[in-house]
Length: 102
View 1: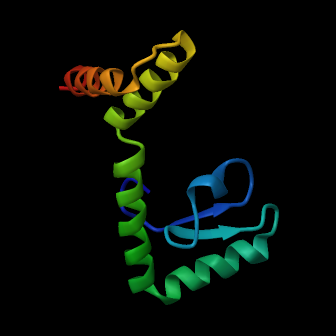
View 2: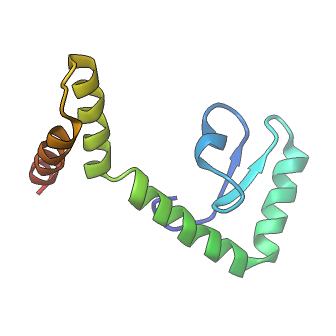
């Protein structure tokens, strides 16, 4: 997804939490015919695949960047440690995450 490519994945595990109709195709686990069907659908409509790939890349960039991941962990740690002022902490977290990956 991060490469901007349409993805075909199974419905097992956490895949459906990330992969959906706007980013690719989901096939039923242990169902080779369903996988083949999804591959044929993808190959028969390259333009739709290209669009799904662009949406997938955007989702990864917006939700799974190093900076966003860092912020989410810091928010979790702040909550666990019981920090009271989330606005102040948010500014500090964003600054810390930006400088950590430069």
